[in-house]
Image (cartoon, rainbow, N blue to C red; front, side):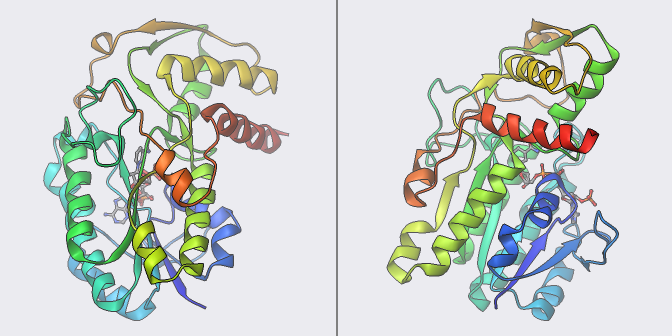
Length: 312
Ligand code: NDP
C-alpha cells in the first residue's frame, strides 16, 4: 500500500483526517507534526515547515506516494508582522515538498485559501479568476500555489474558506464560548463566504483521492490542478453566528441564544484586511469528482451534533 504523508497532523484539518477512517482505506497514513507529537499523545514524524531544508530527509525516509499538506502558517493578523516566516512556511516549504514530489512521482494534495482574492467580486470566484491578495497571509499562500504549479508535480490544489471543526481555533468555537458568556454579540455582516467544515474537506478530498487512484493517465491529467473545495451556498459571519446559536440552542449546547447585532467590517478593525466576498465557485470540483458538496448548513448540523454527543 502507498504511504500517505500527512503534514500538519494537529491542525483543524489534520486532526480531522486522522479522526476519520476514510484516509486509511487509501494508504498507510504517516502523520507528521511540527514537534513530533500528535494531538492524542501518539508519536508522529517531525516536519517543521519553517525549516524547508529539513523536509527532503523526511520525504526520503517515508517515500510517500501521496503527500497531504494540511500544515500552514494560518495566523492571518500576525502574518502582517511576520510575513517572512509566513512565506517560508506557506511558500518555500511547499516549493521544496512539490519539487521532491515531482522528482519522485508523488501526488501533492495542498490547501489554499479565499484570501488569494481581493474580495471585490459579486459572483462566486472561478478557479482561474485573477488573484490579488489583500494581505501577507494571502500573499504567502499565493506563493505556495505558484510554487506547486511550477514544480511539475501532480497535484490537487484545493482552495477552501471559512474552515471550522469541533476542535481547534475557529469561529464556531469562539461563538459558542462567547455566546455562553454574553447576552448580546456584535458580528460582521458585510463579508460573505461559505462556512466549510473539516469533515466536508476530509470526505471530499478522500473521494478525489479514490478517483485519482482509479484513474488512468489521461483522466489524471484532467483531474489535477486547482479546485474550489467549499460548502455550497453562502452567508455572512453574522448569518453564520445566528445559525450557530439557533442550532446550538436546539441541541441544548447553550441555555439561550444571545442577540446577534450586525456590524460593518469598518466597526471591527483588524491588522489584516479581509475580503468582503469570499464565495468560491465549487461546481468544477463537484463535476470533476462526481461528488456533491452540501450546503454549509448541513455541515454545521453535523458538527453541532458531534459536539452535542461529546457533551452528553
Ligand atoms: P490550523 O491553523 O488549524 O492548523 C495549521 C497546522 O499547521 C497546525 O497544526 C500547525 O501546527 C501547523 N503548522 C504551523 N506552522 C508550522 C510549521 N512551521 N511546521 C509544521 N507545521 C506547522 O489550520 P487549518 O487546519 O484551519 O488549515 C488547513 C489548511 O486550510 C491550511 O492550508 C490553511 O491555509 C487553509 N485554509 C484555512 C482556512 C481557515 O479558515 N482556517 C480558510 C482557508 C484556507 P501546531 O499545531 O504545532 O501549531
